[in-house]
Length: 186
Image (cartoon, rainbow, N blue to C red):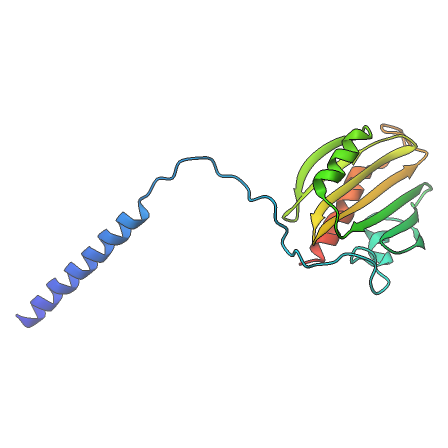
């Protein structure tokens, strides 16, 4: 008899708990899911020139990322310049910039005002955009909100126009460098 009372009591407790759990989880929320905006994964991170690296990448990483035969970095600082030689010929100019108090909206506006084709995106959980502008060669930048400011990689295939026979993909290359920088942040 005692055993039967214990079984009934256990069953009743489980039934009450299951009912309470189901009722608590059965809630309908209206609206549309939206990505959180306005924050960066690590707002205290810096991306400047440190330990002979620009944007957390060393020269060999930049070279390998773009498949270059050779890389020269003639200038380093808040802005780092690279000149890469591609196998089979062709010169690629690359610039990294980190503005520790920069603003993504301001950079976006400037790119659009200068006639670039701007595409918004999210790269490694960071709000970003690419800006394509072929004036002196096939060129594109990829810019993201990061740390306290903005960082950008600009890639230009010297003397090549968009759609040209030897033209590389500057937006894809700029995005590769931006992604590598933001991944090294993790």
